[in-house]
Amino acid sequence: MFKRIMVPVDLAHTGGLERALGCAADMAQHYGATVVYVGVSSTTPSSVARTPAQFAEKLEEFARSQADAHGITAESHPATSHDPAVDLDPALLKAVEETGADLVVMASHVPTLGNYIWPSNGGRIASHAKVSVMVVR
Image (cartoon, rainbow, N blue to C red; front, side):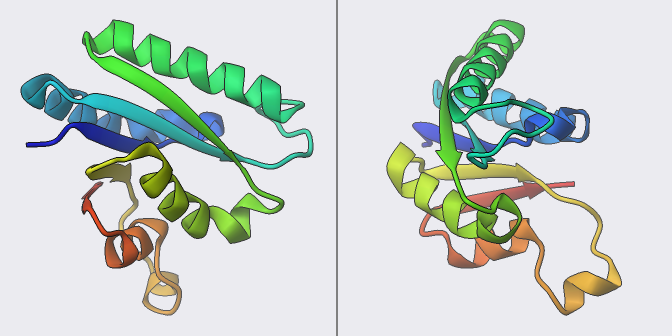
């Protein structure tokens, strides 16, 4: 049913992604799909990487570790943005097209009052993506 599953990841906060990562891995095993881990970074140094090339290497290492841990086929897809906090949703929607994903599995949080005014990333992607989106809490 699914061939390519895109999973947005924040390498600075992988601890909060366990459920989404496990769900994507289970679905990949079930359908024989490839998981594509997408990370969005800026061109300036961050706590994760000093350069976009270093960020791409770390994302690739993350994808390999997930593939080894879950016995799945995995790839990485780094994206660069001038301001990831502002451009995250458009960058992820673009990555859906670039990766050829037919499913997005992404982590989310329990909605807060602010989410009734400003939509969460998961809600925004689910509303605008042309593919199925599974938001995992």
